[in-house]
Length: 381
Image 1: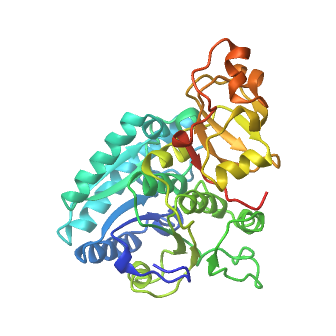
Image 2 (image 1 turned 120 degrees about the vertical axis):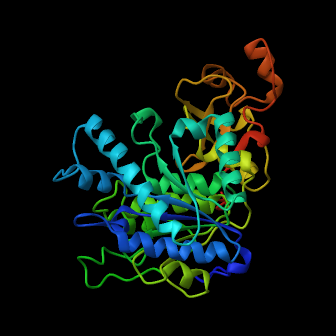
């Protein structure tokens, strides 16, 4: 693949395709024409040797239609019940659609707990790898029937990014109801311009996205930008494109330019560091000075107590903690060797003073580089 909004399918062995609610739903429920079109294209790509993991929205819309509700319920228990009903119908629809091409499908339902627990994370990956080896198409969704706020992944854009990293996929294709990222909402602004390529996700990028809400889904364009930020930081490209455009997947993988291409960092994160960076919820923040930021971002060093200027949160040894520079910009997430209370006592000090202050010294580093997933970029600080 190249960094000019054009894919080279020869370099793509495994892809995650996320299809949004606005693509999969019609006024009276699931859009069967869209489901069949996506299914046909996935089967064509699979026949060429590519492995495809499908992250699909649409369960809520299917459930609303099936039980005759006029709109999406407000009450949590009712939304979960509707999703449970709709998920069965969604999978039945996919099963019938893929059956036409002699392909089998498998349902995978996940919560953030499944991905935050290292053992369950690896189990999920092993299951998905087995399905792909058996030529079965995994259809992934969030387990809406059991989620509470603490274990919710957020939306299917985030879930698709997490699956991309979990499975070491080569690209994430995010299919939505508009052609890509625009400077304004093209549905209401005639002067909106499509942005064909994003090399770096800046505040301006997020501002463009924040002005383009979603209609049926829980995300909108801003959630897609957050997903792109995650996979790009791990060295994986992402494309946002219009899902109802005829043969959009075949066109993209055939080398045609469509949508918005998000250019990844040149260096990919190792699998374990992807897990640290994107599956764990930070329990606090460690703010560091520019010298420490330079050492981490440019030289790949560990975080020592001498570079720390502030600590937020109450966390224990082994917790995931976000590292920020003095401008409150995130540099990455790491697993700490000391508690928040201990770090506050030794921050700003040389490592040889740790034992003198704390009465013990398990490590010289607050976060060892092997446990630090860097997602920020060196900006010359």
